[in-house]
Image (cartoon, rainbow, N blue to C red; front, top):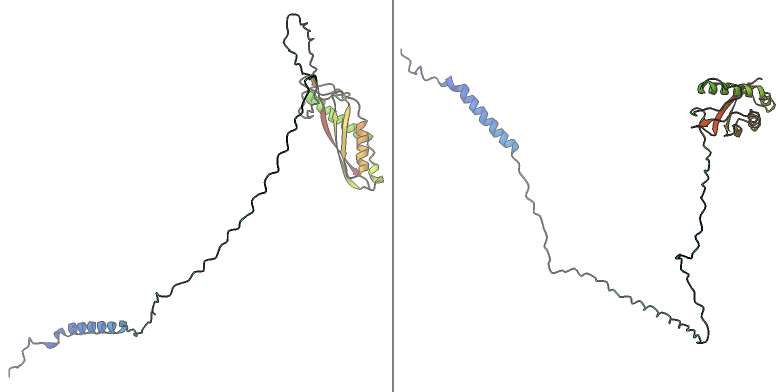
Length: 239
Protein backbone atom coordinates (compact mmCIF):
# COMPACT_ATOMS: atom_id res chain seq x y z
CA UNK A 1 0.00 0.00 0.00
CA UNK A 2 1.45 3.38 -1.04
CA UNK A 3 1.63 6.20 1.52
CA UNK A 4 -0.76 9.09 0.94
CA UNK A 5 1.51 11.74 2.49
CA UNK A 6 4.23 13.32 0.41
CA UNK A 7 7.63 12.57 1.85
CA UNK A 8 8.97 16.03 0.89
CA UNK A 9 6.24 17.86 2.87
CA UNK A 10 8.14 17.83 6.26
CA UNK A 11 6.45 20.41 8.51
CA UNK A 12 9.00 20.23 11.38
CA UNK A 13 12.10 20.98 9.39
CA UNK A 14 11.86 24.86 9.93
CA UNK A 15 10.48 24.72 13.45
CA UNK A 16 13.65 26.11 15.08
CA UNK A 17 13.60 29.14 12.79
CA UNK A 18 9.99 29.86 13.58
CA UNK A 19 10.66 29.42 17.29
CA UNK A 20 13.48 31.96 17.17
CA UNK A 21 11.38 34.51 15.30
CA UNK A 22 8.53 34.09 17.75
CA UNK A 23 10.84 34.41 20.72
CA UNK A 24 12.33 37.64 19.32
CA UNK A 25 8.85 39.10 18.82
CA UNK A 26 7.87 38.23 22.40
CA UNK A 27 11.01 39.88 23.79
CA UNK A 28 10.33 43.00 21.74
CA UNK A 29 6.76 43.26 22.98
CA UNK A 30 7.82 42.63 26.56
CA UNK A 31 10.47 45.41 26.36
CA UNK A 32 7.97 47.88 24.96
CA UNK A 33 5.47 47.01 27.69
CA UNK A 34 8.06 47.51 30.45
CA UNK A 35 9.41 50.84 29.14
CA UNK A 36 6.00 52.30 28.45
CA UNK A 37 5.32 55.27 30.77
CA UNK A 38 2.10 57.08 31.51
CA UNK A 39 1.66 60.47 33.19
CA UNK A 40 -1.27 61.81 35.18
CA UNK A 41 -2.87 64.82 33.74
CA UNK A 42 -2.92 67.80 36.14
CA UNK A 43 -4.25 71.21 35.68
CA UNK A 44 -1.87 74.08 36.48
CA UNK A 45 -3.21 77.47 37.33
CA UNK A 46 -0.81 80.11 36.05
CA UNK A 47 -2.99 82.89 37.40
CA UNK A 48 -4.02 86.11 35.81
CA UNK A 49 -1.82 89.10 35.35
CA UNK A 50 -3.51 92.31 36.29
CA UNK A 51 -1.91 95.15 34.37
CA UNK A 52 -4.25 97.72 35.84
CA UNK A 53 -2.45 97.90 39.14
CA UNK A 54 0.37 100.41 39.14
CA UNK A 55 3.07 100.76 41.67
CA UNK A 56 3.05 104.12 43.33
CA UNK A 57 6.58 105.25 44.11
CA UNK A 58 7.01 107.75 46.90
CA UNK A 59 9.33 110.51 45.83
CA UNK A 60 11.04 112.14 48.83
CA UNK A 61 10.69 115.85 49.04
CA UNK A 62 14.07 117.51 49.00
CA UNK A 63 14.64 120.91 50.44
CA UNK A 64 17.56 123.04 49.37
CA UNK A 65 19.43 124.41 52.36
CA UNK A 66 20.33 127.99 51.85
CA UNK A 67 23.61 128.91 53.52
CA UNK A 68 23.97 132.46 54.72
CA UNK A 69 26.36 134.58 52.68
CA UNK A 70 29.83 135.14 54.19
CA UNK A 71 30.27 138.33 56.17
CA UNK A 72 31.79 141.22 54.28
CA UNK A 73 35.53 141.74 54.78
CA UNK A 74 36.55 144.38 57.30
CA UNK A 75 37.35 147.77 55.84
CA UNK A 76 40.99 148.34 55.00
CA UNK A 77 42.92 150.53 57.40
CA UNK A 78 43.69 153.89 55.94
CA UNK A 79 47.28 154.46 55.02
CA UNK A 80 49.17 156.87 57.23
CA UNK A 81 50.79 159.49 55.14
CA UNK A 82 53.64 161.31 56.81
CA UNK A 83 54.11 164.80 55.56
CA UNK A 84 57.74 165.99 55.60
CA UNK A 85 58.39 169.66 55.54
CA UNK A 86 60.62 171.06 52.84
CA UNK A 87 63.13 172.48 55.30
CA UNK A 88 63.84 169.10 56.97
CA UNK A 89 66.99 167.41 55.67
CA UNK A 90 66.70 163.73 54.67
CA UNK A 91 69.84 161.61 54.99
CA UNK A 92 70.68 159.69 51.85
CA UNK A 93 72.59 156.44 51.79
CA UNK A 94 75.70 156.70 49.67
CA UNK A 95 77.06 153.46 48.15
CA UNK A 96 80.75 153.74 47.50
CA UNK A 97 82.18 152.22 44.36
CA UNK A 98 84.40 149.17 44.72
CA UNK A 99 86.28 149.79 41.49
CA UNK A 100 89.99 150.53 41.83
CA UNK A 101 91.73 153.33 39.97
CA UNK A 102 95.40 154.24 39.48
CA UNK A 103 95.63 156.00 42.84
CA UNK A 104 94.35 153.01 44.80
CA UNK A 105 97.05 151.37 46.89
CA UNK A 106 97.33 147.63 46.28
CA UNK A 107 98.05 145.54 49.36
CA UNK A 108 100.06 142.39 48.80
CA UNK A 109 98.62 139.24 50.35
CA UNK A 110 101.11 137.01 52.08
CA UNK A 111 101.24 133.34 51.14
CA UNK A 112 98.55 131.33 52.88
CA UNK A 113 99.89 128.25 54.64
CA UNK A 114 97.45 125.36 54.98
CA UNK A 115 98.19 123.20 57.95
CA UNK A 116 97.60 119.50 57.47
CA UNK A 117 95.43 117.97 60.16
CA UNK A 118 96.56 114.49 61.01
CA UNK A 119 93.70 112.06 61.46
CA UNK A 120 93.83 109.32 64.03
CA UNK A 121 93.70 106.14 61.98
CA UNK A 122 93.28 102.75 63.63
CA UNK A 123 94.95 99.85 61.80
CA UNK A 124 94.28 96.33 63.11
CA UNK A 125 97.24 94.49 64.62
CA UNK A 126 96.82 91.56 62.20
CA UNK A 127 97.18 93.59 58.98
CA UNK A 128 99.46 96.52 59.85
CA UNK A 129 102.58 96.87 57.71
CA UNK A 130 104.95 97.49 60.65
CA UNK A 131 103.71 96.16 63.98
CA UNK A 132 104.43 97.93 67.27
CA UNK A 133 107.72 96.72 68.77
CA UNK A 134 107.64 95.49 72.35
CA UNK A 135 110.96 95.99 74.23
CA UNK A 136 113.21 93.09 73.27
CA UNK A 137 111.23 92.15 70.11
CA UNK A 138 113.13 94.22 67.54
CA UNK A 139 114.63 91.28 65.63
CA UNK A 140 113.27 89.34 62.69
CA UNK A 141 110.58 90.18 60.17
CA UNK A 142 107.10 91.53 60.81
CA UNK A 143 105.62 88.12 61.67
CA UNK A 144 108.43 87.37 64.13
CA UNK A 145 107.95 90.74 65.85
CA UNK A 146 104.19 90.14 66.03
CA UNK A 147 104.65 86.71 67.63
CA UNK A 148 107.28 88.05 70.05
CA UNK A 149 105.02 90.90 71.14
CA UNK A 150 102.05 88.58 71.81
CA UNK A 151 104.29 86.26 73.84
CA UNK A 152 105.85 89.08 75.89
CA UNK A 153 102.46 90.66 76.72
CA UNK A 154 101.03 87.30 77.83
CA UNK A 155 104.05 86.64 80.07
CA UNK A 156 103.81 90.14 81.55
CA UNK A 157 100.10 89.77 82.37
CA UNK A 158 100.55 86.29 83.88
CA UNK A 159 103.26 87.68 86.14
CA UNK A 160 101.47 90.84 87.28
CA UNK A 161 97.85 89.65 87.51
CA UNK A 162 96.59 88.78 90.98
CA UNK A 163 94.79 85.46 90.44
CA UNK A 164 93.95 85.16 94.14
CA UNK A 165 91.57 88.07 93.72
CA UNK A 166 88.90 85.78 92.26
CA UNK A 167 88.84 83.68 95.43
CA UNK A 168 88.53 86.80 97.56
CA UNK A 169 85.55 87.88 95.42
CA UNK A 170 83.84 84.52 95.96
CA UNK A 171 84.32 83.31 92.38
CA UNK A 172 85.11 79.74 91.40
CA UNK A 173 85.89 77.74 88.31
CA UNK A 174 87.23 79.02 85.01
CA UNK A 175 87.33 82.81 84.64
CA UNK A 176 87.70 84.74 81.37
CA UNK A 177 88.46 88.45 81.02
CA UNK A 178 88.40 90.16 77.60
CA UNK A 179 90.68 93.19 77.41
CA UNK A 180 90.91 95.70 74.53
CA UNK A 181 93.39 98.58 74.35
CA UNK A 182 95.30 100.70 71.83
CA UNK A 183 98.96 101.40 71.23
CA UNK A 184 98.85 105.02 70.05
CA UNK A 185 101.18 106.91 67.70
CA UNK A 186 103.65 107.51 70.53
CA UNK A 187 103.79 103.86 71.62
CA UNK A 188 101.77 104.38 74.82
CA UNK A 189 98.94 102.09 75.92
CA UNK A 190 95.61 104.00 75.94
CA UNK A 191 91.86 103.32 75.85
CA UNK A 192 91.90 100.25 78.08
CA UNK A 193 88.56 98.44 78.29
CA UNK A 194 87.79 95.16 80.06
CA UNK A 195 84.80 92.84 80.41
CA UNK A 196 84.70 90.18 83.14
CA UNK A 197 82.18 88.29 85.33
CA UNK A 198 82.94 90.69 88.20
CA UNK A 199 83.84 94.41 88.30
CA UNK A 200 86.77 93.58 90.55
CA UNK A 201 88.35 91.44 87.82
CA UNK A 202 87.82 94.23 85.27
CA UNK A 203 89.58 96.72 87.55
CA UNK A 204 92.53 94.36 88.08
CA UNK A 205 92.84 93.73 84.32
CA UNK A 206 92.92 97.48 83.59
CA UNK A 207 95.57 97.96 86.28
CA UNK A 208 97.86 95.27 84.83
CA UNK A 209 97.51 96.47 81.21
CA UNK A 210 98.27 100.01 82.34
CA UNK A 211 101.67 98.76 83.59
CA UNK A 212 102.80 97.66 80.12
CA UNK A 213 106.01 99.38 79.02
CA UNK A 214 106.10 101.96 76.26
CA UNK A 215 106.66 100.48 72.80
CA UNK A 216 107.71 101.67 69.39
CA UNK A 217 104.49 102.68 67.57
CA UNK A 218 103.20 100.75 64.61
CA UNK A 219 103.48 102.30 61.16
CA UNK A 220 101.28 102.18 58.08
CA UNK A 221 102.78 103.58 54.86
CA UNK A 222 105.65 105.00 56.88
CA UNK A 223 103.44 107.00 59.30
CA UNK A 224 102.74 106.15 62.97
CA UNK A 225 99.16 104.99 63.55
CA UNK A 226 97.02 103.68 66.39
CA UNK A 227 96.96 99.89 66.69
CA UNK A 228 94.05 98.21 68.56
CA UNK A 229 95.00 95.07 70.46
CA UNK A 230 92.75 92.50 72.16
CA UNK A 231 93.92 90.12 74.87
CA UNK A 232 91.90 87.35 76.57
CA UNK A 233 92.95 86.58 80.16
CA UNK A 234 91.87 83.08 81.23
CA UNK A 235 92.67 81.39 84.54
CA UNK A 236 91.30 78.70 86.81
CA UNK A 237 90.33 79.49 90.37
CA UNK A 238 91.67 76.84 92.75
CA UNK A 239 89.00 75.66 95.19
